[in-house]
Amino acid sequence: MIVAVPEAENVVGALRLRHESSAALGVPAHVTILFPFVPRVQLDEELLAGLVAAHVAFDFELASLETFPGSDVVYLAPVPAEPFAELTTAVWRRWPDFPPYEGVHEVVIPHLTVSDSGRLDVELELPIAARAREVTLIEEADDGRWAERRRFALGPKTR
Image (cartoon, rainbow, N blue to C red; front, top):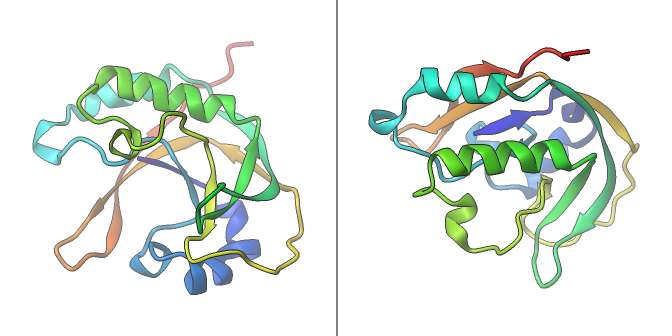
């Protein structure tokens, strides 16, 4: 499950195709909500739709280029990060057998990966203003490519 960030494609799309392995497999610029996720046969999509709709759509900026310590992953950090973390926590609580990143990381840091192959010496036009309107469920096909399965709308502002 991801929040696709089409506003970032013009800035980092070409970089991602060269330096981020999932981009060439059809995964758009995104902030991950939960991966790996529930297999299709175990997922109640209407329950998921309601869970996502309980969270309001929100504006954010991709404000800085960061690197995870001791890692080759270079990413854009969303500000605020909390709405992404809240979505991850809510989905994980509902499906506790599927912890983020298989439970490898103690703390999940919302991010948009630009490179998984090492540091980049680039200057990007930042910040990138964006709006999270929906969560997209993507799935891997037999050939290894990823495609959108369904979009789930975030709720409207309540004020």
